[in-house]
Every structure is written in C-alpha cells, then in structure tokens.
Image 1 (tube, each protein chain N blue to C red):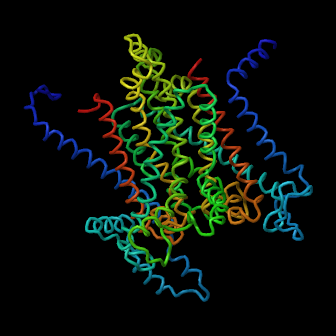
Image 2: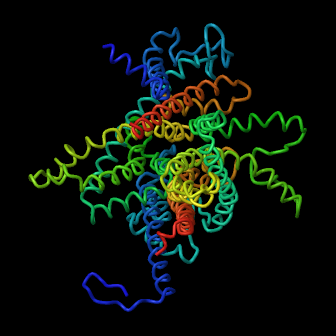
Length: 342
Length: 278
C-alpha cells in the first residue's frame, strides 16, 4: 500500500499496470526529448539558411517575382513555427517533406539510417566491450608497464581527431592493399559500386568495406571507455566491501567476480548513455572520410545545400538513435543494480 | 624560498603530468605568439619557386601548395587554435558554473527546467549544432565561433557543478549565510563558487582540449575559421589531400594539434588526480 502526498491510501496497482504506466511516461519523455532536439535544429537552420542565396546573386539579377515564387514553393513565406508544425504533422505518416532540389526526403531515410546503423552499431558495441575489458585489465595491473603503456596509448588516441585517425589508417593500410594487388580493405563506400555480387560474395564485399571505418569509429571510443572503466575499477578495488569479502576468505579474483565487477560496471551505464551523442560526432567524420552516405554525411551536405528539412529529418533519426542507446543503458543499469529497479 | 623549491620538487616527483603538460603548453604558447616574429617568412609570404618543397634549412617543415612556409602557417594556426580553445573553455566554464550552481542551489522547478535543457542539448553532438549554425558565421569574426562552441559545450560541466552545489546547499556555512539574510546571488558567488574553484579549474582545462578539437573539426569541414585566416583545423584539412604525396603539409599541423590537445589533457588529468588525493 502506498500513500499519496495528501495521505489518502491508494489501492496497489498491479505490477504490470505500474510498469506499463512507467514505460508510458518514459516513452513520452523520450519523444519530448527528440521533439525538442528537432525543434532546436530546425529553428536554428531556418534562421541561418538562405536557400535563395544562389538565385539572389545571379547576373543579371533574378526578378523579384521569381524569387517570391521560389520562396512560396519552399514555404519560406510562412513563419518558422508554421513551417515546423506542418513538417512535424506529416512525419508520423512517413512524409518527411521534400529537399530544396525537390526530391522526396522519405525515399532516402531508409538508406541513410541503414548506412549509419551498419557503420555505427558494430563499431560502438565492440568499443564498449573492448573499452570495458581494457579498463578492467588496466586496473588489475595498475602501475605495471602494460597498464601505463595502454593508458598512454589511450590518451594519445583521444588527442588525435577522428578525421586524422581515419586518414592515418588509410595511409597505413595502403601498402598492404598495394602489396595484395587488389583493394583488400577498400577505402570508400559501403560496397563495390557496379558489382552484381550475390550471397556470400556480397557479404564479404560489404565486410571488407566495413572494417577500416569501424576501426576508426571504435578506437577513440575504446580509449575513452577504458580510461573511465579503469578509474571506476580502481575505486572498487580500494573499497571496504571488497576488503570485507577478502576477510571472509574469498580469493582476490573470487571477491572481484562476485562483488567487485558489478559495482565497477554500474557507473559505465550512465557514461555510455550521456556520451553516446558525443561519439556520434566521430561517426560523422568517419562517414565523410570513407564515403558512406549515412546520417552524418546527410546532415553535413544539408548544411551545404541550406536545406532545413533534411537537417530536421537527419536530426530526428540521430536523436532516436541516441535516446534508444540511453534506454538500453538504463536496462543494463537495472540488471546490474537492483536498487534502481522500481 | 627554500621551502618553495623543496615543495616544487616534491610535487614534480608526485605529479609529473602536471608539470609536463604545463611545460609543453607554455612552450607551444611561446612558439605561437613569439615564434612568428622570429621566423624569416610570414605565413602569407609565397615562395612560388618552391611549391610543396620538402623540409629544408630555409623551410624547416617544408612549403605548402602556394609556397608558404609550413612552420609559419602552423604557428599562425596554433595561435588561432590556442586563443579559440582558451577563450571558449573559459566561457564554457563560466556558463556551466552559473547554470549549474543556480540549478543545484535553487532546486525545484528551476533545476528541472535547466536540466531538461541540458538533456536536450546532450542528444546531439555539439559540433553538428554549430555546423547547422555555420552559415550565420560567414563574414563574422571568429569571436562568434567561440560563443557558439561554448554555447553547446557547457552541459557536462554544469551537471558536475550542479551535483556539487546540491551537496553544498545543506552545508553549515551556506545555511548560516542564509540565516544572516544573504541574497541568493551572494551565496552563490561568495560562498559556493569559491568552494568549487578546484573543480572548475580542472574542468576548464579539460574544456580547452575539447574546444580545440571542436574548432579543428568544424574548420576541417569548412564550417569554422574561414580563409584567409588559418587554424590547425583548416591546415589539417588542406593537408589531408596531399598526406601521401607531400606528407609534411599533413604531418606538421597534425603534430601541433595532437601536442596541444595531449598536453592539455595530461595537465587536466594531473590536476584532477591531485585534487582527489590531497
């Protein structure tokens, strides 16, 4: 039985109902977050972009009537809130509007989101696992040479921008490609263009295209997570409860396995949730360097083409991705830390 | 005097990172601001008989696409990157301190509203939001770039500050100040912020590294520092195309950029470790 603030007794809701209600509130919160992020970028884009700039600078000057007609066609004669609401209202039905060039945006959504997911999910998942592994390993060997060396490498990796890392990886791999005579690991695109490979051959072709960009995305994240995981694990290794477990006769590894590991992993869930949006920036550079036509590449070319609707669509898809990762991190936290289950 | 020297040596042994980072940063700053005056070539001077020349006694880091001295270009770019990084970090930290303390001290609705803003801004990479705003940057001074970088980088620090402010809210000296009738502004600026000074200094150092990387990323895409101005980011961007054929135009700015970020990060981490284990 729970009591409300006013002291009235509430009938205990069934657990399923309570969970459904809680999930509903969370979903609404996440939807609100995505909405606000899209509203922000759409407004900023509409305020700064000028899709008519090319027309205005022509010689001889474009007649005002043509400018007005073009503005009306793009909906620029409407105030920004009206434009945004019109766009948002159409989104649930799968209509994301048209680009400034007049193409249907929804046609590209699947392909762009797919490219980003294929690039980003394997890289980030590998980075989380490897980062945690390196961090734990480093903490257990704290102070030894291998630990110092791996942490120094991590620090250097974090100091190198992703666009340099991608270029350096290409340069390092080039001699191997040349020695092999063919593009063992191709540098550009998702698959060999114009090839009509099927089945297994198409799979390996895609995989070979995937390796270098994945490494580019994963390396900085591995460095980032491992440094945090090492610090978290060191704190746990120094804790009272682990000493108590040892005092009860557990071996060092036994105590760490049954008590320490869980505590060391808990702070990582929050870290992954809030840093994922930041790592997405690395994905944008990677897409550009390796010629993947994903969400980041889309957003950047939308800025170049002064296309606010594409910016909004790409932002929405990225926001959904970030929020989903936050949700997964929350589940992981609930699994690790029963106190947060409610 | 002797005491100072002894404690300095002791600190040096205890935290080599702090001294290493600070020394490299000071050297880089001197190189960036004094160096150009000592060089025989300015960064705009073109030696058209020696285009993309390899490192030589006259040009220690070679020459660029228009025959510019790469060292002079790098020092000029380093200057811009350092100034932008430093100013953006200070502004970021000031913003974060103001928002974090207000949210943490006042709590309630203000706290919820401000933290919702933080959550919204954390959904997207700051670099993308600034990129969206970049058309407004054309023709503007790079000072606007500093404001934009800070405006989308303060969120993480403000969360840390907020947590500290919440725990300070119930401490004795804050309650005493409240009971003596001190205003909210006074409590925040005179009682809470001094308590957080170490934390803010450390975060500010870390923010320098982030801001330098953000600026480099934006300039790499052409959204940051605009020509004819150069920053390390624009230099890396122009060098990338010739990274294989004329490596010095790529390696030199990358080296300066990595050294700056690495030294800042090492300094920041050293300071943080020092703060944790007094």
